Image 1 (cartoon, rainbow, N blue to C red):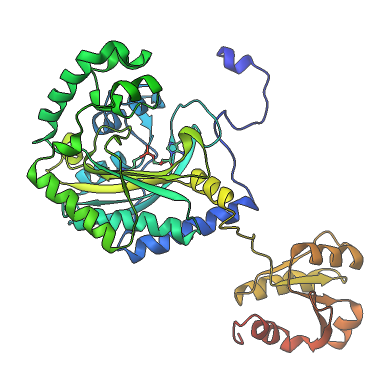
Image 2 (tube, protein in one colour):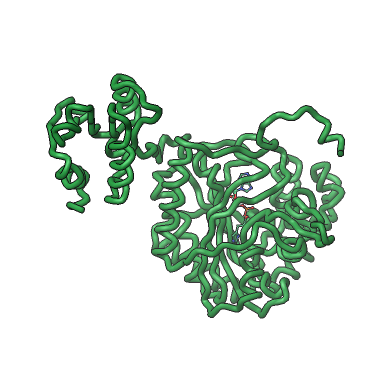
Length: 428
Ligand code: HAM
């Protein structure tokens, strides 16, 4: 028994998590279907990897110094003493799977996954959130950067989002970044005492992150800091130019943000983030990603460049709410069966109709005609099939149009064919 076991039990989901239930879940289904369709269109195939991994997949992949690994990861020992971690994001797991299976490249996969981070729970920031994402491994062709960013952009557009902004940066590579970091360190060393309280102490550990700090002191103190974008080596500069040219050609609007660093340490070259203007504060990022040309090697794999993005389902839906877009109605049945005999007719007909591809529902527990008709109305069905003892006797049923209020009598042996025709399914 731990002290937690002795606390009074309440059937509630843990802090920072939430249930996704009908009718809200209809929006999730539609969002996921939209992403799946677009990802397939762009040549991505579904990948599904375990929710937990050897904790080192994330330690080495995302970086010990990142907040996600250092402060937020859910880690535990299993019963055999293996150190495991719940996935805080999707990319490291996908690259682990790549290293393990060595599929032919370019390897393009998309995913839908919960992700776990022990964050301060607030609106738009959860301890379990969900991401849709896509990754490509095996090429550093900048045209793929354009394809990946365009996929994310077109996905948001398909959901009806318009009030978002794409911030773009290049973080350079192993050739140009070290020289830049030395220059940035020298700059920060001279002004360290004026940085925000946190970065005053730790600026040296990850100097790039100081540039990404949202506190006024850091923003002011680093206003004239050297910019990585001005220090790119020629191949990185050419890569970035090809990416921005491709985005322009695809009519994807972007803003250069030379301070965009992002919170995961694997990024090289192209990095980007989509921010929605409708959701305020630190949680306005609806998606982000970039290149990670060294990640495969850091997990013991071959040198394999990669690029991808992940996008938070909850945040996208908050942005949709703010713009009044992507309202999705929960599906209603096509037909509701009202049976006031012993219910056998309804029992058999719902199953037969479902086999015909018609969404059929019924009432249970031998309820009265009035109560069943009420249930039919509430269900949102377009039609009701009504059967009482008189209809059964004459081998007929009444088909009522619940919107127009009209009705007709149909012979039982023609009923399935007629309903299938009504629903555009063709005769069974
Ligand atoms: P990330 O920026 O850490 O990147 O997360 C991606 C997206 O997940 C964010 O833009 C946001 O929409 C959502 N998100 C992150 N944390 C939370 C949270 N606590 N609550 C709600 N939503 C959240 C990655 O995870 C990278 N794996 C993206 C990537 C893929 N880079 C390359 N490939």
